[in-house]
Length: 347
Image (cartoon, rainbow, N blue to C red; front, side):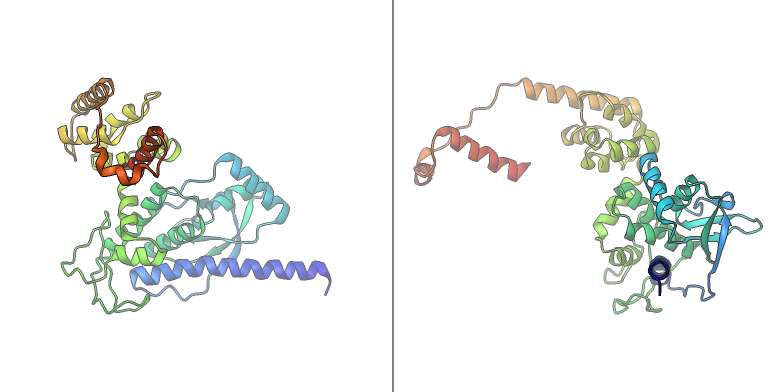
């Protein structure tokens, strides 16, 4: 067989393997989390007009498209190598349109190459399976997702699971795909069952994606930030430490707007001490913006007083340290060691 034919065959095999993996992971996620068998009907392979495709609209799964520079590089790669991985879509009822389940960036990059059609795999999928395919392929294949993107994806799965009204099963149901194992979760990833030994939706999601339940709770909580704060956390994290963002996420959307200004002042970063003061004076989940501003100003004034106060003199009983002082050099070296110790213990 000629080398070109061998290369083409290899590419087709790689494409088939990648496509099977993408769809199979989505189906596995669906069967694991929703205890329903994926439609056994064979998907339909075809070329679809790009103009007939719509972004995923069933749920807010939070994934951002590639930025322009990365999209252009991807497009150049596709122009040179071709598109080896079909997108996955499902028909939109009573129309000639299709909803993209996997392949938004591929679609846009392929469009930039000048093509008007794209290889697609058409599947019949209910909302739960559609969300599973869209979420699983991104969470497992994209390492560059932000914590908010992941939080929205987890939340979409748990919200859909809650809509299904499924309940927990016995603790012995530990195998993914076991039809006896039921799931339970709400939009915040919290469980309803009183029996702590029972599996719940959040644990199933955590086990499936190889994360902890704490990571899921944290990501979902941060996904509750309003868009301006989410943008700051994702793109200017130095202006908004993640520990502070978690405290802000306890407030409702109206209250959160007050924090946007706090996080956008040049040369200032909101810190844990300020957040503790604000939360103490204006406890969540709701507070007037003016009250939050006032609490923030008090926190900053307290911080200025602390900085202006003369440093406290620290004294030690040298007799207690005598066995060690001979092994250390100058007082300056002792000071350096002590400071390093405090940094490691307190941060």
